[in-house]
Image (tube, rainbow, N blue to C red; front, side, top):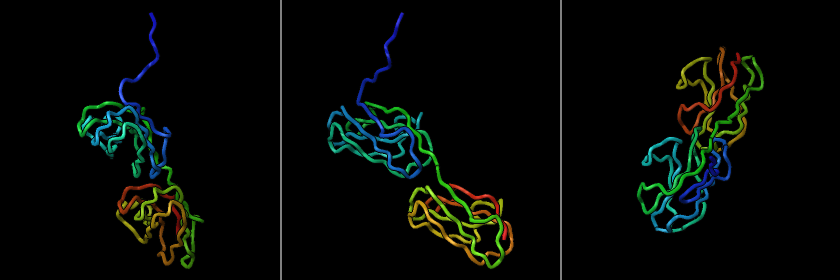
Length: 189
């Protein structure tokens, strides 16, 4: 005839927001844990099995508290809690998402051979080895004409000089990998 609103049995787990930018810290709050030294909380991909974690942290015996998880790539996640170094689930949060909001642009659509190509970036994850590359248009991600590391700067700019004639794109990559964060429209030299 009627039913109640949903309720949770187990340890309450929450995050401070429901959406995060890549590289932003996810603050997970937990309470109601048994208080064992090896109780732990984990970040998992939504739909993951009980023994599949992305990151985890022991609570150090705290029955309640917070933990910051950083460096999560784009995806949909949950926080889970487990007692005493086991995979016996005692609580799970609502889903939260991490999205790539990286931005990359050049200051012009065409340059003379003597001009500097100024590339500006914003909202990168902030890893020391995030990098900006100039590459021929439509080339593979491991093809690079010139590059520079961001040294952890989430925003900034760099001037590239001495590019040979051609059509290029500027690309931003994550933490010394070819994991593309953003790329510009094509420009010519």
